[in-house]
Length: 232
Length: 184
Image (cartoon, rainbow over all chains, first blue to last red; front, side, top):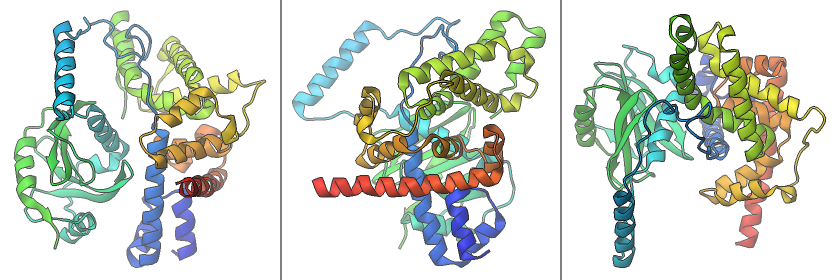
């Protein structure tokens, strides 16, 4: 593939998975950089397109689907307690950051957006490829965490982030290192058939998400915390 | 992601089970339907109406769907049809940034960063024929062949529109960014 054709495809169909396109990106640093810039631009377009979605009443079509179940109502004392906590936090200058529910949702949305990454596979990604992806973010994976079958740099919230998939006992486990997206405390991920957590890591966070019921998340999290370090 | 429930529910289960399954499926797909509807019409209230009308129509004809894996595409097509029906006589043309409606202005004010804000402005001003394939590709993840089928276009035409959409956005975005630099 020629540079001109590559750049044309960059602007029209950058995620086609065309082998010739991928091969050209590997062999031409200038085009690879051009593609990286366009991916970041597409990441920004995606962020802008993701407008907030208003809630609808449970009894409407497209509601939360809980119309036939008793709705959980927040006890009044909990609301009061939250208000008091917020007032105390502000008065004492301690800002309590509540868990970022939207971050969990966005991670799951990102996973669903890349179905190829979740295909069950036994083909191990070469360690050099994992190194490339991790080092681009300034990190290295120094420990064997299992069979890595997917390793890509993705754009998430406008940042380039390493996105890996390891085959767990019950299916693929997604790992997303988010160096520029901090969380103050662990955030549970539990939606659309996925479960896991997003934990504070270095100055950002680390998301480890498997299929609901995956039993290896805890072990995987410990291995990753021990195994990921700053690249030299 | 497939939604097998739409097919399996109707054969042996009763109406409440069918409604529950439909609610579950539509709640899952609603964000995509709403965002697609919004970027077609650029109006939050109308987008909600379009989604609600789409789900009503889908509910009435759920029994006719034979391919559960194509539920999302089927619903998006209904959104598109409903939108076209709405604008049969009154087609919105490209907007000037100074002509944004109060709800559009409010959406820009709620953006989390200047860059996202500027990109939304650029998207608001992009013509319908360029914005729609871009939404289907970047937000929904459809291939150019699928977009061609949904929009009833040739694949070459989709590629051209996507290329022009990005080019126009880059230029518009750069203009917005330069305004920030000048005023900053």
